Image (cartoon, rainbow, N blue to C red; front, side, top):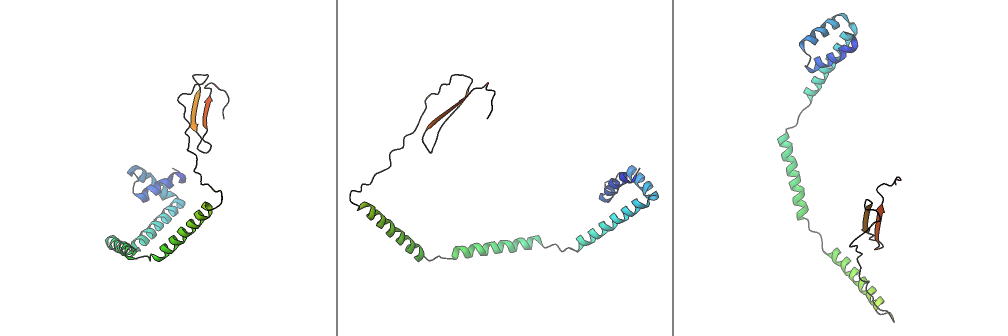
Length: 163
């Protein structure tokens, strides 16, 4: 075995998944290779530091944190439902808007010769049947909402051009 073959074995040994027969060949190589001995020692030192750091991290009590969060959510929802907004700004804005609308209507309606017209009735385009010259042609029919036009496309199935 060479040093390139040993690196995955060192990682497997670290993870605890190295089979016994490969463990024996790993030990034989490490006994004769100072570079791999040093790699193994650095890996073991790094893992020891990692374990020490993770052991020092204080884990919060999940149940206590959940209860605190629920209490904060309950308090914020209760305080938001208890707040009453004053109605006066809504009334002031609504009344001024209604007054402006009444003035505009009076201005338009009182002009000499002014007639109020209504929009024409919307006509709906409809196609009961679309016939193309070629029965194998692909057709698409739709009504354009902006113009109200009925649009029909027919494309030959054996057309050599695309796009």
